[in-house]
Length: 225
Image (cartoon, rainbow, N blue to C red):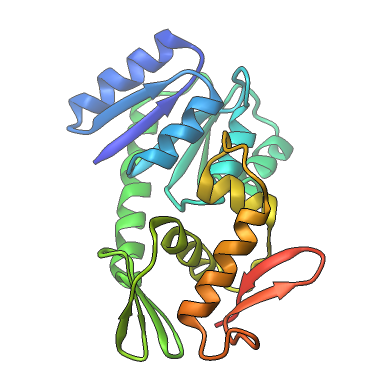
C-alpha cells in the first residue's frame, strides 16, 4: 500500500513516515498543498494524509482539487477541533479527520480502516464502466462501442473516463482543462471543445445529436448515462 503524507511540519512528517513504514506501508512525503496535488495526479496512492494549514495551497483546497480527478481516501490533520471546521473538511471531500496533537496509534487505526473500506469499494466497482452501447475498460484504458474497440488518444481517454465516472456532473472548460491537462497548462480552453468534438465523432452514433456527451449551454459539459 502506498501512502502520501503532506504537512509543512517536517518533524511530524518524519514521525508519521517512520511509524507507517514500520507497519509495512510505502510512504512518500510532501510539504505543501500544491505538491500534494501534483503528486496525487501523477502517482497511484492508496491513501493521502493532508494537513489543513499549509503554505501555497492549503489542505482544504488541495483536497478539493484532488477530488476532481481521484477518489483516493483522504485523512485531514488539523490543529482545530471545532465541529464547523470538520464539516468544512468533509464538504471538501475528506474521508476522515484527526485533530492535533493525536496518538499515532489512532492514526494507524484510521489508516487501516480507510484502506479496508476502499478495498471493498474497488472490488464492488470493478474495472468496467458502461452506459448503453458504450463501455470503458479502465485497467486497459480501452473504449468500446457496440462491441468494437475505439482508438482514443491519451487525453481523449482521460476526458471520457472523468465524465463517465461522474455522470450528470457538469464540468466547465476550465475545470476540464485543470483536471485533464493539469493546472500548469497554459493552453486555450477551446482545446477542450476540440477533444469533446472528437469524442462525439468516435463514440456517439450521431455526433450532431449526442446521447451521452452532453453540453450544458453557458456552463460546460457532462455525461448522460
